[in-house]
Every structure is written in structure tokens, then in C-alpha cells.
Length: 88
Image (tube, rainbow, N blue to C red):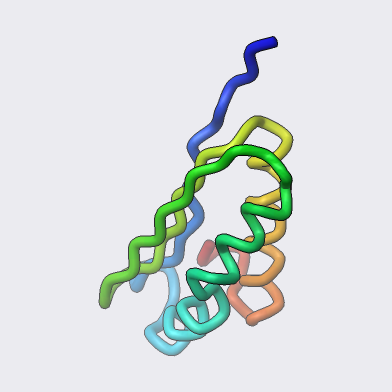
């Protein structure tokens, strides 16, 4: 059975959030935490984190349902860090 992988981007940039919020994102989503979240879906995945002075982006590749679970977990961490849904 062939399954489709989805490439998902979740990020916050200086255009959507103030600098102090962007710093919270970087501190809330360490590389190790993001990898653990991806590993928790128990399937093959790929992940890349891009962090510059203007934005923090997490790209991940996983199968359909797994990618949705990873995205929801990361979004919940951001919302718990007082990052608004509009900024994500």
C-alpha cells in the first residue's frame, strides 16, 4: 500500500509577530523537542528547522494523519506560549 507524504510548514515571522514573541517561539520549540514530536508519530518522517533573525520555520514531511498530528502538537505548543493563531 502506497501512502502519500505531506510537506508541512509551520512558522512565525517578524511580519506576523513582535520580536519578543519570535524569541518565545525559538525557546519553545528546540530542535530536540521538534524531533521528539516527530518521532512520537511512530512513522518515517523528515524535519528541518530554519531559524534566522526574522523568522523561525519548521518544515516536516510525514504521512497524512501523522503530519496532521505533528502540526497540531506544534501549534498547541505555540498557542500555549501565547503566540496567537494569526501569528502562526
